[in-house]
Length: 128
Image (cartoon, rainbow, N blue to C red; front, side):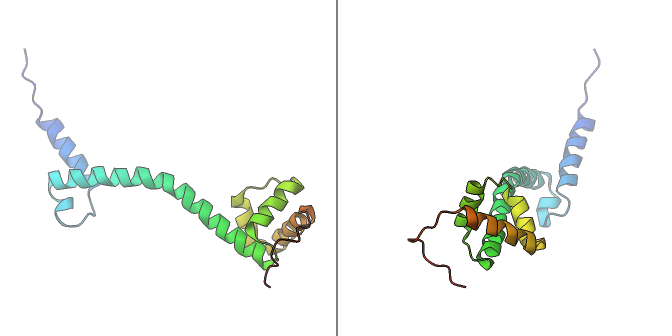
């Protein structure tokens, strides 16, 4: 039976890890063991942050919608409530896009939301 040699596979494994660690600082890009630890940790960061990015963008969209709706005299939560009552189904991503790039169209949506809201006298007046 032929002898099995692992040198090619072992070298490839090490080369792949060191290629992935390219650009890391110090020993983490040069020594196999340190590079392997850092590459594994980097993959963990990537996995975690791909999921965190979705929440980050949602928070950014909400901030932009809030700024746009307050500029038109309505708070974010009252604006979203009014859109729901008016039956306007636009997601936060599109609302944020409108608030930034199409202020006129966004103002129209705010007016529609205002019309749909019940007159609540206990709500504090928004400072202009």
